[in-house]
Amino acid sequence: MDPLLRHMVAHDNVRRRVLIMLAIGAAIAIGAAYYLIEPESGMYPQCMFHRLTGLDCPGCGSQRALHAMLHGNWAQAWRYNALLPFEMVFLTVLAAAWMLRDRIPRLHMIMNSRAVIIALLATIIGWTILRNI
Image 1 (tube, helix red, strand yellow):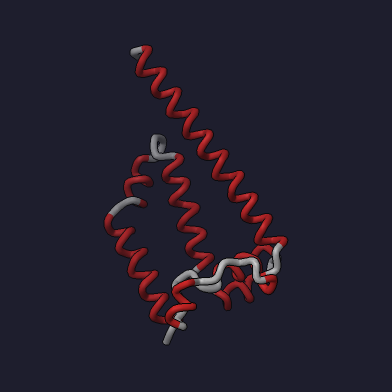
Image 2 (cartoon, rainbow, N blue to C red):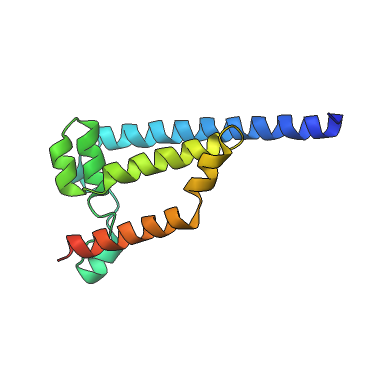
């Protein structure tokens, strides 16, 4: 392998590891904040869509749901936002597909396919309509 190409690949791997570590650190910090701060404290940002329209957006209740899940109250989390657990699984698989794109290129290709993007968009639109009926 050409030394320049080897250096570029090594640099890309280091950059990817740094991004992964930053993402993990951010997730831990955000998780700690949502675990420690009670939703009733008024410290969570408010949804501008809900404030302007009175309707729930697809993410409304996610912050309270995350707090409930971190405290093991899954039923309450489901009542706040039933889409959140599915979104978390989807985002985890999407992140894994990105991190492992060189090892599992097919997973990366599937997760970034038009069909998955359209299904995700349809799910978000359907959830928004369903929760506001």
